[in-house]
Image (cartoon, rainbow, N blue to C red; front, side, top):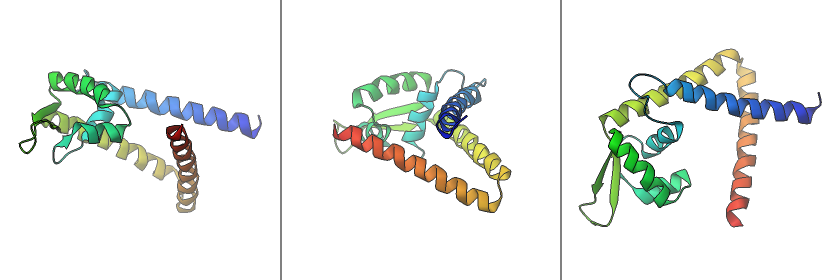
Length: 151
């Protein structure tokens, strides 16, 4: 198998495996009613101060309308709180409920465990090479994304 086929297989397999592992990690008694998309929205809202809808939508690179639909569902499920700004009633602020904070921490721990496991497989010199390679791939995809946004 040549370099092209090897890289293609590795990237496609890695992407699929990460998505599958993440989906299965969400399936537990407490958080069985959310999807990976919901999880990424919860992560984008973050823990801390309330955020306005447009800033979260911008971070997720989705429209405010799309985010509104998802937030409606997350509010109904008890993961997100929605309030109007006291400074400007037109602004909708969202924050995580206690349940939302628990799922955020659960997801954060999931990512930390993956990184810890990967690091444990590599020596110090391999970690540097791995980071350099992943950074290059990440930069490539960011460049493609920026080019597509200009179109």
